[in-house]
Image 1 (spheres, rainbow, N blue to C red):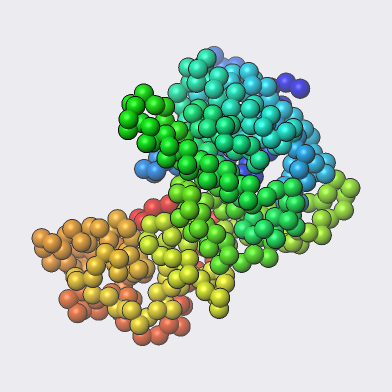
Image 2 (spheres, rainbow, N blue to C red; image 1 turned 180 degrees about the horizontal axis):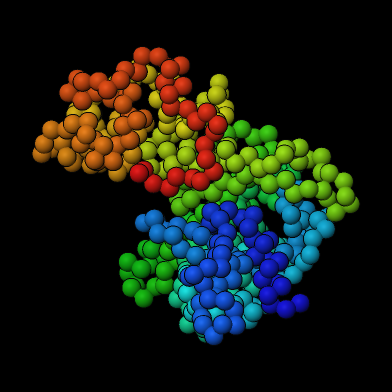
Length: 423
């Protein structure tokens, strides 16, 4: 099997892991692209190239592949499970190094995301991933971004070595409860995955303390760690998922929890539908979208999981973003006087984000505010107007929750593109 065919198989196999990227990269031929064989340069091949975002909002391109899609596990939700009838392939370490360097030098990618199926003992699989990252750094002179997936069951020694060469590490919990794991992925253990997260946390802290004393101490996984949760493969509700996410952020200082709508993977290797999986026509993308919005509230708007959902409402509203849904349920806290409210209270107003909230605080120290001025500060008045006053003046009144729901709901559900910033 040649390298191009391997790339096609193993890049396609990696697309189900959402924990680094939002989409594949397509480059239609046109005026900006040189046709192959024309004597020019810059012809791009989108296979395996995906988009991710940095903390400051920059979009970057990553080579996203599996080392191998051969797997000994039989996780029901996974297209690479041992019982699946799928074409198998594996890279060698040298092939991955040549491929990464070639794409990076041509400015097609800015980094590497590398995971793998469990084709052998977990330590052996992890050693192959580490060897790829180490040789890229030490022999190929590669200084770009590397994200390595931690293989479940490996020990602290290998995690320590992985963190020396990778910028980010991730261990995917996949399902939010032990019962769900036992049902769909009986060979996986939540306890084992949590231990890997704990090892990454402790090693990062240890290296940080060592660097305070010895400046030459190498940096350990400077971009931290992340994980992924599959949405819709089990009966677990949104409240359980958000509660787990909040706990992961608190206990393990995760940079991100990624949510991946369950994609029906068809039938088992014997041609019989797997009864453990839900019979759904397609992935629950709207639900995934709402969970990302709720996750944003956890990380940047100082909400707790219990405030967003409670036992009486275990699922997020499909027609309202979580912040608006919360505000309509708590109309007793509105309208809010913008000229005197503190930052925490401003964050609870639909249409006011973290950036616009800070701008309001800074601006009102030196001059009075106006509704037009709020718009210039980034406040989305078409949402905020129902929940605020300014020097006692209303644009609208939060008098009827049913009316507000009609005015602010997405009648057909949200679009599939996740809004990244508070613009």
